[in-house]
Image 1 (cartoon, rainbow, N blue to C red):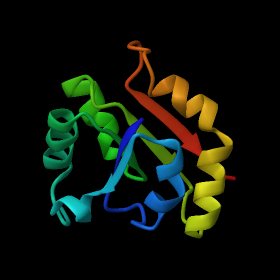
Image 2 (cartoon, rainbow, N blue to C red):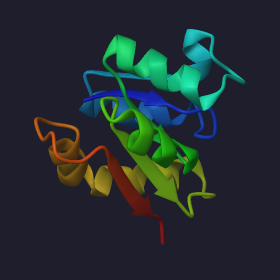
Image 3 (tube, rainbow, N blue to C red):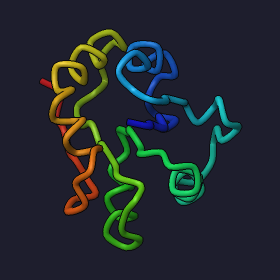
Image 4 (cartoon, helix red, strand yellow):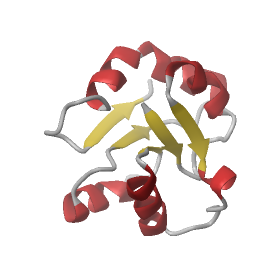
Length: 113
């Protein structure tokens, strides 16, 4: 899994996910803070990342632009970083399946709590 964390996801989440992913970067690490969703989308597509976000606007991009990148949208995620990491890691098999070889779906919507 190669993940690009959207701006609305804490950069600190990367440290929790890195042991389980080939690569995890936050948009600020690649100079894209305050960038429009379409710019983040294009960067992810160009560099082989899938996106983790709290922003449901990426749903529109999946519908209009297709995928890759695939998008993991986390709802109700205004929780501490450690809690969000715990939530995502508990779903690691589901994430690996979605972000693996499957080509049918471009959006995985998860709800915390």
